[in-house]
Length: 364
Image 1 (cartoon, one colour):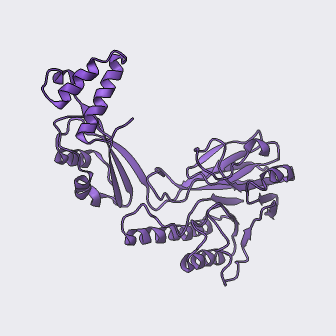
Image 2 (tube, one colour):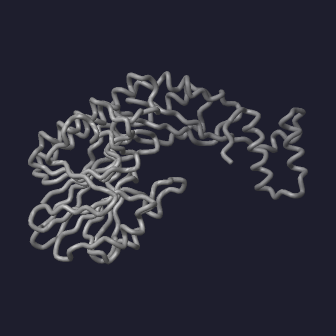
Image 3 (tube, helix red, strand yellow):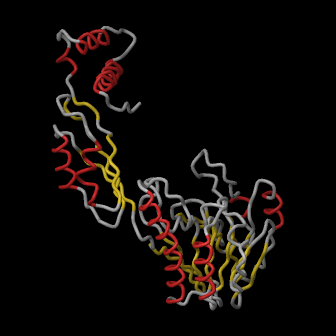
């Protein structure tokens, strides 16, 4: 049996990180098209079921276009079962329209719902919340002689702080007979052992939407031997566009023209992809002020979208200013005279002061 595990498609996303309404509309259409492509892949590769582990949509107000396109793609693949578990971004909008719910679309509730597929595979899931978490973990009962897939949407305990999404208590799911814990919410592919029997997996988002989502994105293809219950898992890159970040050392550049030349000579631009360029290195105090606007005007058409970030510092021998009759010279003398700072701390204070005078960003 073959099952696709995907999550976090975020259809109908506003794409606020893109300039101009037209490009945002284009990306929304591409995200929707990627779901259709996913269904086409499933049909072409003999997939029996598609498991969507939350955040199929980005908002509760699902557009008519997105709702009808998703339903049509599911209906047209009537030989495939689709299991849709709502995430923290999903609401009732997708299923509340006038169109009938496709016969091959199965959903979950706030208590455990299980579906048997094939000869020996069971898909069980529940919509996790702070109100039902404790009850869910205690009430999960699985048959030990079946291949058990359990799906939830939430962050694992090691996820980034500040995220208010419900945490999936992995310790409470151990020794429950789970073979594959299909999770959603983390936007990067991640897999690790759950216990001696099973693994847990985040497939990541199907398509990166911003510069905090670099790298490959796609879904997991799960192949299950229904006789032995052995399984293999393959991450399948599937994004239409890739988001890449690269550091460009501009230490020896003096002008913005030099920086543009360095970027063009070193950055592997690809017209379909996003490119984030971090300007790094300690530059001479004699350099021109860095203009990211000018740099973007020279290279912005070399990729689908380009972002330039100035992360440079200043390269200077502060002692050269020790006897200079200037504001910088007086600042250096004052800091050098401090007895409560060691030499490393004095150098740091001087650097921050020079960067502030030069109008640079302080990397504190």
